[in-house]
Image (cartoon, rainbow, N blue to C red; front, top):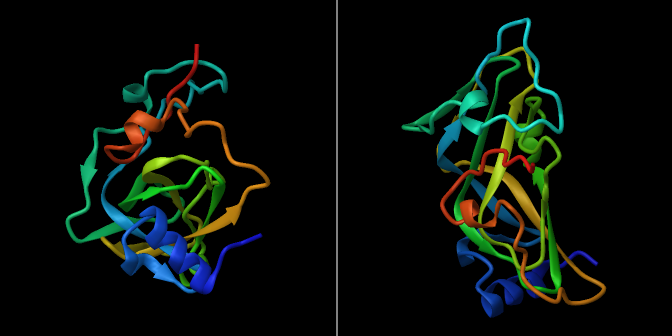
Length: 179
């Protein structure tokens, strides 16, 4: 069951899920934060094997700041995060979707890591990719995605404590590869 309208508004207030200004009838707004990471190009002879364990610094740039607009040329992608923190109750699960207007420009805000587990508390990491033939500029603090909350069939026994949890309290999280 997706939580909407007055029930969503009450949930936001009751559990301090996020700032009240982010409530939007059917979902919660996700606004673009102020920092991002770019993938580093690799020589044509190199590749990353899924399951290997490269250090994030070998495949991503240093953190960069969005001063006014995030500029994405065709085919470019970044890792960034929400401007605000979100705190998901233990009996709810969140799904992130790109705002429709941005999606109609062929920009995708999640490369399908769009779930937010029960008990998550932090900034939501977003993988943004420009799949259009145009350069797209996204002003910092723009509404770029929506968070839909769904009631779970049972309450999680403990809050989310995955490998990204500590980093999510600070901002965008880079790939943390397990050994």
